[in-house]
Length: 411
Image (cartoon, rainbow, N blue to C red; front, side, top):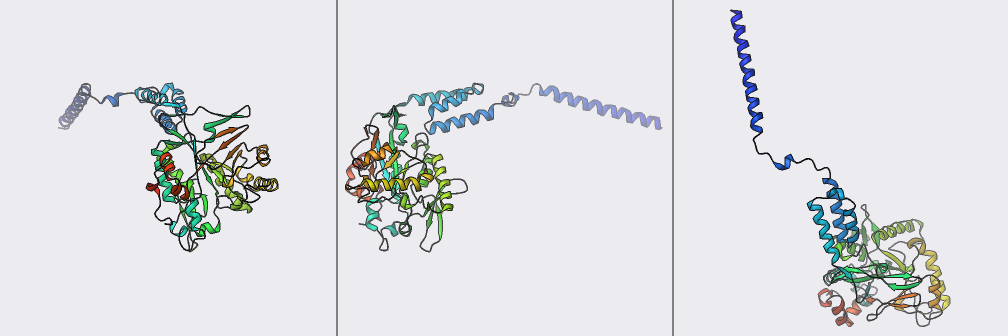
């Protein structure tokens, strides 16, 4: 009885094993005839991540007008070649062919610190409402101006993109820009936040946030402090370039005309701790492409900067600036003259001998002029005075005044 039962068990086990083998073989052979996804059958692309990284880097370079550099990055990795990669190379070559030598006017505009709170600046409690109306613009006006400058084909450039010194003589460089685009030099004067301006609706300090971005501190009437990325030219322009990187040619920003007696970006140069903070902000701004230049220590008229300037006062001003400000901003060869005054001899030769071979004035019609070893830079002031009194010229060259004019200005 037991033998019969054992025999049945063995037969059943053999049957199960045979059935399992048959099912397995059926699955195996049927899989040979099933259409598989071609992508799954492709060998692993070991270059995929690197290719994506290199292509992304080159595309960002192109956005900032580093076209030659973008091609170099791509050509340095022939092992990444495939249809997509080669197509991008050809696209960038086509873009490269659209860059032509710019021939035309070299425009240079300048601003002062921006009015954050127009009601305060132009209100009854303001310490200088008429002065602010004449020489300043509001945050809202500046933002609208940037849009119109971009739409008119302007691209920010640095002075070194346009001029260079060869054998001690300034020459104009061949500047390649996309066809139809125009270079624009920009400077910002009197970068300091005095107690009266802070009270009247201007920012109080420029700082770096945890990410290293430029942020304005604004002190409110109750002395509380807020942070804003719309407190002055610098954070606003940085935000604008995040959205429109093509508005800057190879990381160009603007020149900052520092006035010594107004401090530096809201910091006291005579306070060791604040001086250290100021240097950190300045160095970060330089990394971004901002350039710091001399706009005098005193920014005073009379014997300093006027038709009756004296050598004694000019020497005092420059010596003080070099002692107090140069340790913070570094050495510069650019001097932005207060009030746009052109110093007479022997003062002009004196500052040339100090190494200032770029001299910026105020002039809405002239163009840069090379005089001996110096480059004279006329600049167009963008402010309430010009928008009201030279409207036609501004409309023709830069932006439409009535589309940016802040209605909160003094009537």
